[in-house]
Length: 466
Image (tube, rainbow, N blue to C red; front, side, top):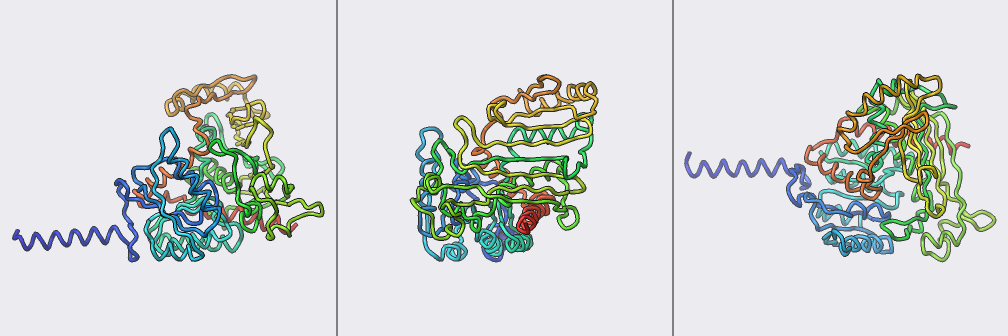
């Protein structure tokens, strides 16, 4: 081969690699896992979840992160959180933040596009629009929940997923609760027919699967008292509770009850009942959690005759998914009693066993997992099946133990698996980075994200009719 021929071949290879690594708008499309190849852009960070994505460093992610946001305390608080990670004594991060502040921040990000992955976690009023604009521009998106808070936003999100496929980018939401150890083990046990049997169909009065979550407006994050934006209590900006935290609960029902199965939202989900009710918040409580001395004008329409704020953060839905009755409930109190915190309750009812997560006073407000004999079930057969199956689970999760508790079983989980909610953001991000290398999401993820948001919005629409 002559020198000239070798040169031509080399140029063709370089050209081919360039084409395969970029789309028509210049965004890198092929990820290899190389150091620093993922370049983050954070858009309008108004929720502390945006910072938790950066609580740790990732080899694949460049330390330079561009932030685009309107001027104000939201972006100031976000940068302060990241700087706190950079300056902590143990395992400090080394993020280099470059921020742009201005009214045209979304357009500026799209025009400059210094990164290839957008992080969005903040005011949800325009989040659907942000996501759609980003994927239209060939930008990958890792979004905090919820992606949408109303019917119009749901339609945009459906369009965004179609656009993401067309532009060969990945749109994904941050489902941290899939990484909670009791939930992981609940799913594992439910997939053992000898132990669990088959998932019951249930009824509206006695659903086959129930997930209930209690949250608090005021709490501590990374050891510091939380400061929420003033708009967080405005459901036209944050979204009602029935479309917010429920995103996690509906996701877990799909992920646990129908693992790796596609959910067809238009034929396999039927909303049966839904309701909503407010959390009543005094002006003093509002000031404690936002540091604002009075209610903003946009909240005054939501005050009762006592001057208290009504925040529709509580909701419940009962629906059928693939013929199975499910119940989801979310409650927001202002502040947990001392020594307590957010709680979670979950039950999956099988023909041979019930698998239950409890997180109450008896559990010291720490989630614990139990396997229980259902009413009319064969306790001896269940006990034997569980003991026979448990060594295989211990191989996957060394250190867990099976302990008899009265007539039921308690799954003892070592502290090494209880990494906490904040660490789950890093785990989700690691998974997303692998999906970027793979160049795709699992085939069931996109239809099930659409099904999840359809479920939430259907519940809201039904609750608003009352």
